[in-house]
Structures are given as structure tokens and as C-alpha cells.
Length: 359
Image (cartoon, rainbow, N blue to C red; front, side, top):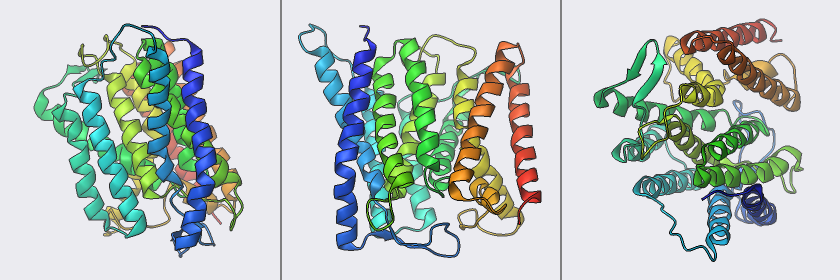
């Protein structure tokens, strides 16, 4: 079955409008019950901000996808095949979502969250949703299960925590997520994988609505943070879309596409490489990888004396630039491992320059 762009617009609009309507209600509830993200020496914001804006991501996504599917299949004598892998993904996403809410309300230690994230990540290889082919990276194609299983879990944990930790200034996590999800919507549409296109589109609608309140909302009125319930859920869904896209083992995956691994890598590279750099830096300094500090990319840029809005623009420009460079290099025939090397060089030079220029 093929779908036209109207259904994609419907899914996006449902999620967007639902989030726009419900976010003020969530903000009011947070104000009533005192559910705030409080400022401290590590955080950028200076005021207490309602922190449950991201709780709307999951219901907005579900509403957009379900309503659109019902419209699509109305009057069509065809059953919608959901599949065990999608069911398990929903279970894992619910687990991540609930633990995020609990952390926002009660608080959890970083190691406790990590354990639960690992349990949710194990859902992927158990459903054969995993990295099983490196698509020629370093001359390697198919990899054995004993490598693919732990590699998949590691990548999921990396993406989930990368989206969580990059959520440090207004609009950054939601802005990057919107670009990533929009890209996956386009890619999945071209593959004819319309369910995944609708998932990407619906969540993109929710992140755009959140961006409006987070970036433009006034303190004490409608401004809100997504909290762990939002950032962890975003990371989990993006990890699912990224791993699913690079799979080529039909019927679970898609036909072999040489570029699929590079595309997934490109879309999650910036937040992931930043969290890897910060983790290594903390270990070199003899500190716990889970200990919060002010060494992330947005902190480094703001230490140059720039405000949050300018910092956001710079990081978004860096993300888009790396994506376009990777596309150009791939079309030009450069091998994936060299493209990755170029990305690492660009990122390293960028961090080195902003560190030198910090005030």
C-alpha cells in the first residue's frame, strides 16, 4: 500500500495541535504542584522552570500514528501488520517513558537510570532488531551475533543518553530531534516504510510544538523543559529509527543499501560524539562518567560569551554542515571510514577552537 503526502501531513498536524493544546495544561499542573527544574551552578537557566513538557511526546506520537492509520485503512480490505518487533519497541518505549517521569518527579541516581535503560535496550536484539552488517566499514560486512548484540545495546544506550545530556539549553534537544526525525520521515517514505514514516512525522510534530514553548515561552508563563521523560523517550525512538533504517536482513529489515549505515551514523553523530568526548574527559580527570559538569558542546560555546540563542544556531549549523559534507563526500565516492574520519576531524577542530576562544 502506498500513501500520499496528505496522510503524513495529517499525522504531523494531529501531533502538533495536540501538543500545542495540552502543553499549557501541563505547565499549569507543574506550577500548581511545584514540579520545577531548579537552577544550580551547573545549569544554564537562572529561574525555576516547569519540567514535564516532554511527557506529551509519547501520547502525541501515539495519537498521530493511530488516528492516521485508522483514516488510511478505513474502507480498505487489508489488515495492518504491526509485527512483534514494533510491539516490543512500544514496550521498551513505555518503560523508558515511565522511568523518565519517575525521575522528573522523584529523582533517580544516574546508575539506576542506566540499569533500566539497559533493560529497555535489550528489547532490540531480543526481537532481532540489531546491527548485523557494517556495510563495508573497514572492509567488514556481516558480523556475528556475539558482536552484534552488545554493539546494538551500546549504540542504543549511547543515543538515549546523548539526547538526554545534550538537552542543556533552550531548543537544542528538540531542534536537533526535529531535524533528525524529519530526515527519517523522508528516508522511510522513500523506502515505502510508511509506518516508520508516520512515527517519525508524528514525533516531529510534538517536538516542534515543544520547541515553541521551550524556546519562545516566557518564564513564569508558558516556558517549559522536556525533562528526562521527554529526552529519554526522544533518544529511544531515534535509536529505534536509526537501527531499523540500517538493517538489511529482510523481512525484518530492508533491501541492502550501501549508504544506510552512513546515513544513520550521520544523523546521530553530533550528540553521540559529544557525550563520548565528555565521558572520556571525565574519566581522564578521575571523575565518574555519570557526574554532571559543564563540558558539553553547548557549555563550551557559551563560555565564549555567547547567549543561548546564538549557541543553538551554531550547533544547528554544525549539524547541517556535517550532514551536507557527508552527503557530498559519499556522492564523490569517498569510503565510509574516511567520511567518519572527516567528521571526527571537524568536531575535534570545532571543540579546540571554541575552547581556545572561551572567555
